[in-house]
Amino acid sequence: MAIDASSLGYATKPYELSYDWKTLATYALGVGAKRDELAFLYEGAAGGMKVLPTFGVVPAHAPVVDVLTKTGGNMAMIVHGAQTVRAHKPIPDAGVLSTTGRLAGIYDLKKFAQVVIETQTTLAGELAFETVWSIIFRGEGNFGGPRPTADDAPSVPKDRAPDWKTEEATSPEQALLYRISGDQNPLHADPVFAANVGFSQGPILHGL
Image (cartoon, rainbow, N blue to C red):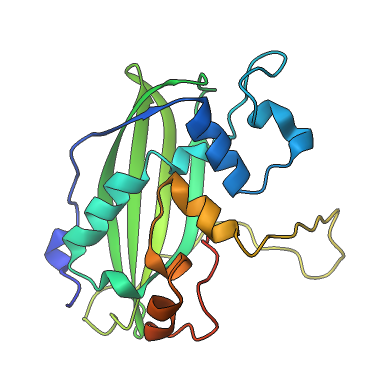
């Protein structure tokens, strides 16, 4: 199916996510939290359970899928391009989040199509998170659409060593754990599906 450029501007209904400490702990484990980061994993932690600011992507999954479906693109061929998350306030360890999504951009990258989705999440009527998703549809380019606008993000300096660096190891099961938090694209779990869409090495880890 081809990208439907007329879907630009589409806005979703509000999607609600009721979450508790289990939701938060599952997400934290999925992104690699370790037992010495107990405050993100244990509801009985001293001072109360903490929430990773990047948890803001979790309530956005449903509206993002809604928007992606609306574009008419081939959902089997999507990969994550880029992501921003803005956390406006700390959230408690349980509650109900309400999220809407909007199709903010459709761009022609010749071989690929880029879809940009913006979401807003509220808690008790107050803004909690904003996210921007860049999703790539492989093989969906050359539809005559505009090129993406220039990125105003600062460039990484190339003339000196980094100020600091850190390395993290991911387990072979990392994608299977992370997908419980909402991104259930079979590309991250099913070896046959992965091979059929061009990843012969098997399922890949989520971009997030």
